[in-house]
Image 1 (cartoon, helix red, strand yellow):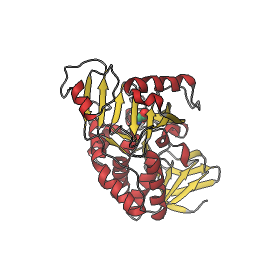
Image 2 (cartoon, rainbow, N blue to C red):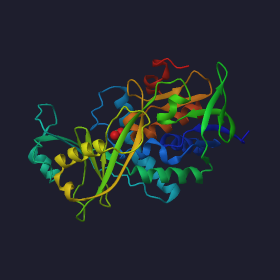
Image 3 (tube, rainbow, N blue to C red):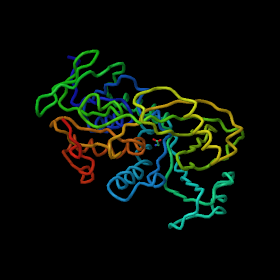
Length: 351
Ligand code: GLY
């Protein structure tokens, strides 16, 4: 057996690392088991914090997302103070330009959009402005989370492939991996798109292809995230512009495809034409963890000592602070936040 911790977290993405940090801050000894810290869904994301731009309907999911967005400034500040690093949190606001007019509330006409962000495509007729939405640099955030976890004494084990979670009818008894069996008092499953392979839980991969261009002028002129139809453009302050993302039900098929890249470039240059002359810097892809209702699975499981934190679909980066906070409260103080009931796994058949 590979040492003992109070809690083993299976999965080294944003959710797993952030939960490990919150637990460690409460004095819990934590081990994080990860096959590869690079393959987590957070690398597929652009780091948008967009509960309003995503158009999430009023209800528990919107409440969860808004609570998480509200936690961001203080949560990031805590991590940055711990590490001395910068995750590039930027409450820059999100603009959602449209090609068809709308009579719905808070509609901004084209002139108002131009005041906020010059250079939009000529077909844009107006749109919505969400000043409280924003972004974080998800790559930087991944680094900050790892360093913070290390500094707090979390045991981070990479290159560990989990093969099986062993259990009785009511309890998880261990995690069998390629490097041995890990046992602890409690376990957290945070394996994102790979969760369905470890527990009978309806989480499947939804592939997202992405690319980045580098602004050809300095300072780069995009000052807000642009959220269009099936496209988003996320400007970093350093001139990198992240563009995403496709949404493909193709299983774990890797790589970028010409069709995926073409779709992104066509939609992005229609929305913001200056991009077309800037240099293409990188293409990559990732796998979102998606449930049948596209809502996360959070909290208690059929096993008394297993907590679930998966299925965050398009909102993993946004939901990281609230997920980590609610799960640490659940594990340390048996505090069940009322919001968790909407995300319980019993809405699906889980065995
Ligand atoms: N968060 C946006 C996406 O998953 O594409």
